[in-house]
Structures are given as C-alpha cells and as structure tokens.
Amino acid sequence: MKQKQKKPNIIELIRTLQDYRRKQGQRHPLEVVLLIIIMAIMAGAKGERAIARFAENNKKDLIKALKIERREVPTRYVFKGIIKNIDFFELQNIFYQWALKIVKIKEKDVISVDGKSIRGTVKNSHDKFQNFVSLVSVFASKRKQVLTTAKIETQKENEIPKVQELIAMLDLKDVTFTLDALHCQEKTVKIIKKTGNHYIIGVKNNQKKLNLDIKKL
Image (cartoon, rainbow, N blue to C red):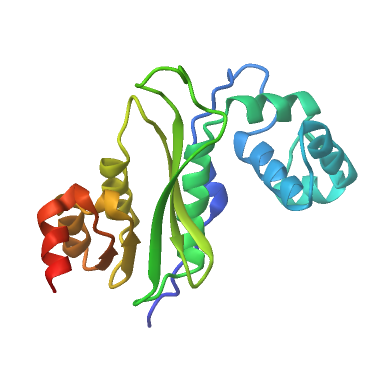
C-alpha cells in the first residue's frame, strides 16, 4: 500500500532559523513568536503594537493552538526584538519553500525573472560607482505567485550569478523562464537547459553578434 506523502510543516521549517536571542530568559520559542507575527500581519496588523493587540485579543485561541506552556502570549517588546533582528530573507525563503510544496508549479508554466532597484537605498549618489540595493524576484505568472526573491547590494554582488543560483535552487522542471537582455549569458542558458527547462531571453547589444544574427533573419 502506497504511503500518503506527509505535508510540509511550516513550524518545522521555521525551527531551522537561527535564534539570535540568549537562551536565558526566553519565554517563548522563536517559531511561536513568528507564527503569531505572521497571523497578525495576515489579519491586517501593522507594527509591533498592533501585533501585540492581536496576540492579546486572541490569547486563549493562540495558547491552545500553539500549545504555549506559560499560558501567556509574547509582549510587544518580544515582537519588536524579533522583527528587528530576524533575517527577513532567510524567513522569506523558508515561507517560499513551504508554499512551493503546497501549491505545485505545473509543467509548461511561465516563470518570470526580474530585478528592480529599491528606491531610497542609493549610497554615494554623486559617485559614478554608486551602491544601491536591488531585489530579484522569480514569479510564476499564471499563478501570480512569487517563488523566491534575493537581495543584491550592487558593489558586493552581481545580478547575473544570483539569478543563475536561484534558477538552479528552485529545482523546477519543464517550465519556461523569461528574462531580460542582461541575462542573455551562455552560463545562464546552460543552467536552464541542464535543469530541464526552457527560456525566452531578450537580446540587445550586450551580445552584439547574436543581436546582428537575429536582425538578419
């Protein structure tokens, strides 16, 4: 008899996150605090005060559902500390990892890859070697689902190898990636083909010979 596949548990995934707090004085495990934060945000809470109000207003249900031993929900200061110190991108990728197993990407789906500069992150704006933060997103167009994102600080990293890393990490099969001309790179194409996928990539003068060959067609 075929065993039923166990559904991925987001609590188990959250437990893999690094807890920056000292063991001494901890009253609630990190996964409990984060789950309350996630639920509060989903309910419309903005900021640690609103999250704390959500926790207090739903205290009885949260204690029962999350098996909170101390019979008290975390305080506003606990929420504030976690929000301030948690690695957002690590948490985000855990959520995407869980979501990908719940909502399956089908063969032939179109996956868009796009990088955008984040407004207000420019440093040394008058220097020709400006430093700013970009966000690369991998997006399933039909399902309107973000599969993963990555932050890039331009003076430390390059978008091209980061996108190559994300494509390999996603472990998708028989989907079509769409990318802009920046990613018209031999290595990127090889990774897409090696992982059993397809591509539509823009071509500009960063690949002059290829661009000229296409214009001759």
